Length: 416
Ligand code: UD1
Image (tube, rainbow, N blue to C red; front, side, top):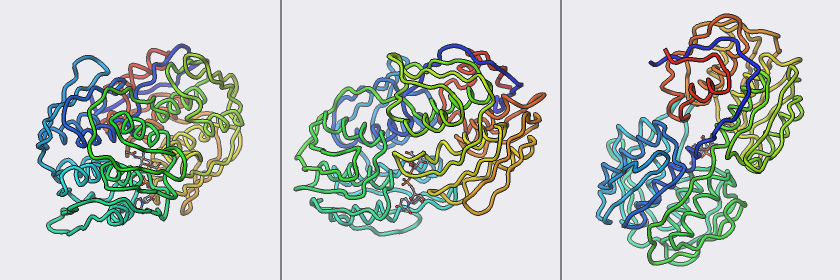
C-alpha cells in the first residue's frame, strides 16, 4: 500500500476536516521535556512524524499514548535520558528541536547530527549559535552533538535569518534560563505563536511570539498542561490546490484563513473565490486557473512548503508562471516527475518556469518528499488516464487519511 492511484477528477464538492498542524505538534511534543507530569494534546494528526516523535520521547523515558482519536497523552516523571539517537533524528530532522528543552532542564543533551535531505543541506549553525549565546557549549563526536550548560542565562540572540527551527530551539531553552532573552529577527510562523502559547500556559513568560522580536523572561519551573494544536495550513493549502486543479466548491473545516492570507490572495489572483467562514475556509473554482508568479519567503510570505503546490497548479493553468525558491536550495526534485506527466517546466537555479497545459498525461511517478508527493497527487487530478504515485509513505509523514479525505470530496483516488 505504498502507492496512490489517481485518475482525472472534478468537480470536487464537500467538506474537508483539516487536521492539527504537523509543524506545530512536533515542537509541542518536544516541549513536554521541560516539565514532569501529564500533558494532554488535542487535534493531534495521525501521521508518521507524530509516531516517530512519540518513539523519540519514549526512548528518552516518556509514556506516549493516544487515549482517543485526535488526542495524545504524554507523561513522564522528569528523569529522562537526554539523548536523541541517530536512527530517529535521521528519519526526521525536526527531532533536533529536543536540544533546547533538554539543555534547559537537564543541563546536557546528546543529539545525533541530522544529515542532509532531499531539499539539500540543512545546517543547524544558527540553532547552536543561539544556544551558545545563552551559555551552552558543544562538542562533536561520533556523529553526535554533546551539549552542556551548567546554567543557561538570558541574552540577546540575533538570528542571521528568521529560521523556524533556530527560533524554536532558542525559545525552548530560554524559558528556563536565568533572566531575560530577546530573540531578534525571529521567525514569525503561526506554529511559533502556538508553541509560545503552549509554553505560557505551562507558566513561561513569552512575549511577542508571531513577531520578529520575542522576549522571554526565564522562570524557575514549568508545569504540564492541556492544549489544542492549531490547524495545519499546509494541509489546507493542499486541498485548495486540489480544488484549483480539479474545480468545484469546498469547505475546509477548522482551517484558519488568517494563517494563510498570502496563499489565499495568490489563489484569488489565479481566479479562485476564497474567503474565511465561521467554520473554516470556503472556496470555489469554476474556471481554469490563471498563471501567476510566485516567490517563497519566510512567514508572512508564501511558505516554501506551498511551492510544489503552486508548480502543480501552474502545470495546468492558463499562461506562464515563474516560481522562485528563496529558502531551500534544490527543492525542485519533483519537477522531473511532473515533466514525466507531460508538464512543461524548466528549472534554472532557484527558478522554475511553468507553461500551463490544458491536460497532463497520467504516468508512474515517485513522491520525493511530503509536500512534493502531495503535489503530484494534486497535479494528477488533471491528467488523462491513471497516475500511480509511488513512495506514498512520504505523504503519510504529513497528511492524515489523505486518500480518504480526497475520496470524500469526489476525487478518483485510491491506495494500491
Ligand atoms: C521548518 C518546517 C519546514 C518549512 C521551513 C521553512 C518543521 C518541522 N519544518 O523547517 O516544513 O519548510 O520551516 O518555513 O517545522 N538554516 C541555516 N542554519 C540554521 C537553520 C536554518 O542555514 O541553523 C537555513 C536552512 O538551510 C534553510 C533556511 O535557513 O535554507 C530556513 O530553514 P528553517 O526556517 O530553519 O526551516 P526548518 O525549521 O528546518
